[in-house]
Length: 552
Image (tube, rainbow, N blue to C red; front, top):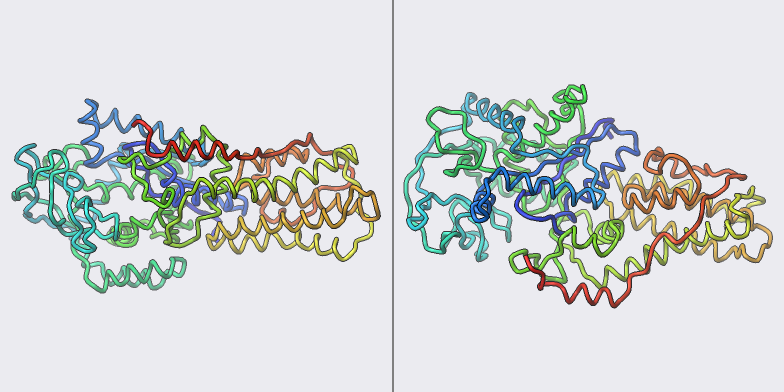
């Protein structure tokens, strides 16, 4: 593990509210990982930005009578507010429309152009005679030529994840009429010339998921095509060439460069050499499986094209999509739950717990189910962790006035319990370092369940021999839980810490201290009370009934 790290996640598009599907695969896993790395003593920074350019934003701002700048500024602010309420702790949140990113994008293009990786070519593009404009990307909908999925945008099939050369059965997304074809000049990136170095990089990077690597390598074997990096619209980063008036960069050319430009802005403002830090750090890009093509091909090819001036990612944790009650999330059909809406119902840690617990480190899709959510919170978070914490601390407060007694002789069951504490940090570390966050959370649940059984077996309320040892070990086990949960459930972890009567915060404790018995005899606990509240079935029924009926 490197002593430096930069963590990014796919940039939220500044075109609407953040919903549960957004946070499940990218932002929450990235946040948990960043918190873990910081506990490990890594100088880690979580960097993000709103993705401000492109056709959908231009379309929507025109409908609302706003300038694109006004429109994206609103969503940049709103997105950050929602993320913050969910305890997604960015070290810096910026925007792709920043002057720093625009300058950086133009500089990268110029270097690629000077190196011979860019060429101009006349193409035939869809044109709507009704709306009198060329129709790039999301101005055109149709059928995917690869998997035949209907109602797909021309720049990305959300069903198979491929980027079509040309969409089948095209329709103008503004007026619905079939477009004609007209000639225009565009600039292309010679992606197919990078097949060999891309394949080599994938082959040599052992940190990437094997199934994703194989998937992308098969794409390369089947033959890459050069990439059209310009669009005939008014909202985007202008191309820095005299004969490119009226053209801007395709959003996927500029947006991932904001990973770098935003990191440089943040680090340089802190007095750190941003470029040197980037190239000496572990680089993480957390993404969903729908943008594998861009992050495994476009992004690394562009960095290779500027002579690896900025290192390629070491990790690209890729997870599947979230469905809602086993149906695809769709804002147009009102089949979604906004993050802000959800946080009006339940604490952020309830959602963090549930999403992490059902989200494996794979491309498999996961499903949000209201009934399962309630069951997991009530039986696992409350019935397991909450129950043990309350039993151990509540009993100590009642029977020992909150003062920790010194342990007496250890029986075998006490030695086993102590060993559970001593081995927890290394067991969790192995899972966290491999990005198996769901398994790590399960390990914490197993740890808590063991101590529930231990407490029950020792029966300290009978005040028999070994009671002091049971209390001493149980309270220290609560401390271990608080530290290990701090990456997953920061608010709940802090509440437990306060009830333990400890200073600082659990997130500031070094990782290895999870397995230390640092609460000594004579320590006095804080005030004890239940950490969590049960979810009622009537409320769940109401939330389910509301799906699909919200007013947009």
